[in-house]
Amino acid sequence: MKPLRALCAGELPRLVMFDLDGTLVDSVPDLATAVDRMLVELGREPAGVERVRQWVGNGARVLVRRALAGGLGHSAVGEAESDEALARFLDIYADCHELITLYPGVHELLEALSTAAVELAVVTNKPERFVAPLLEQVGLGGYFRWIIGGDTLPQQKPDPAALLQVMRLAGVTAAQSLFVGDSRNDVLAARAAGVPCVAVSYGYNHGRPIAEEEPQLVVDSMAELL
Image (tube, rainbow, N blue to C red):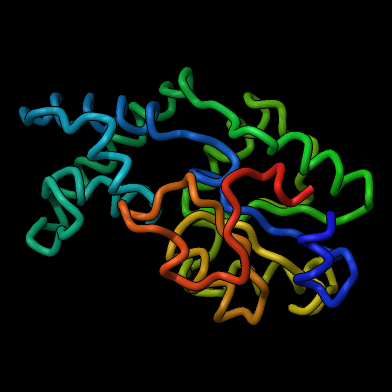
């Protein structure tokens, strides 16, 4: 695991934190199904997978607001309208987990880190109640000691609060930690926490290359970290 050692002064990190959607799993097909069902119930046209792929990454509320607006900008969407749509979306999404898939190399990397006694955590903007069941579904349930969802703390990424919380719980410093994500929010959160960041090129970054955000390392597959 030379790339990881290179980011942590020649040693393996003691803690690796991972984003979920777009980093460990491809959840867009399920999210798009739930978004489209919500829109149809509200008398609107469905958005489709490719548009939803551009909208994910900032939590369920922002995803729903973007779906109502039909684009990334959602300032014109009213609170009452978004609250109603969000409630519908969460109810629908609770039963939409049939299409989620694991990205290549993820299981192998987690197994190697676990074997090396590296502590693992998930830090995601997805509502916490969905995270553990999804990890179990794709065979990753036993790897993560800590799970921080988008509603676990008052703040969400790009705020560094969740990363700082996990580091406190693990009793490690930023120099002993690493964050792996796929979006601008992930890079900004890691930077604000003082943690080196690995970004995957295959994830969800609103259609922009993640290299533009200048993480410490960009990889095309988790296998490259092995």
